Length: 398
Picture 1: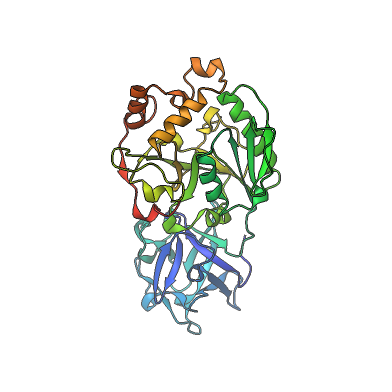
Picture 2: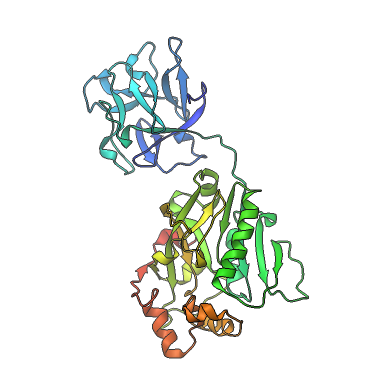
């Protein structure tokens, strides 16, 4: 489909996933951001052709040009002031069967190319003969897109420490009426709370399959009413790399069926770090975390999801990983708090099948030596933990 005349678009390269960004006379590439004027381009059609355009950056008014009107492969593509009848500033839109467009320069006949598929911030943009590579394929994405409606859902029972953190974080990005809390075995005199939508759930016995089924049922119901639904456990914080924006911006730009997060677990070094202070951010109090692929869950979706127990993977095992969308698991953010949580969970009735098959075994470890071993040495099923420093740019996220 040919974009409408004068539409404001982002030019996103299929190889890097990044958008062309004007920086004065230079062209950079950065992660797509609907709010960034430097990423907005206007395709101005010429009077001679429906498919030949000038590609103008809306922030500075400069246009994509082949430097020196050169005709050879590898000639640099730069930003210049518009000139009348300058064929080296004209581009023909070529729709591709694989999706997106190629842009052919009218003067040289060669194609706009992200040289060497460079994913860096300052790539070389050039022209080259067409060869159908991903670095010559461009997604022309409208930037004035409708804001995606969104909801978040979780199941909670007896979570005095984790639920306030969960609610505080997600309330930044979701309206109260779009935050759905499935309250498992709620107290009969629980007062109303206008910060979220409470849904009482009465079920005597907990099992991982029941947990999956009840959340999945509500996810299916919500996805009929919202564009995007996020389903998380109460100790899970889903956050994009803060260098590229926050969760609200990520959801606004989200146009895939679903996405897998990248799992990381916060680790309390309780021999040198104080107990958790609820009045401060989690990551400003903790110095280490570790990668845990178990928590690379497919939780954000635009379609009804069908999960295996624990939400760790889809039933069809399809994946769509985004290395820049993190799931930050807070289970081990405080040693004593975690132990108390395990002790409380042992008082809840758990399905014998879960116990026999060791499902959620880590949540029921309470013996002192076993707990200490699990906390610091057992990533999952005996795999070792490899702590890493929490990067500074993550400190204010949660």
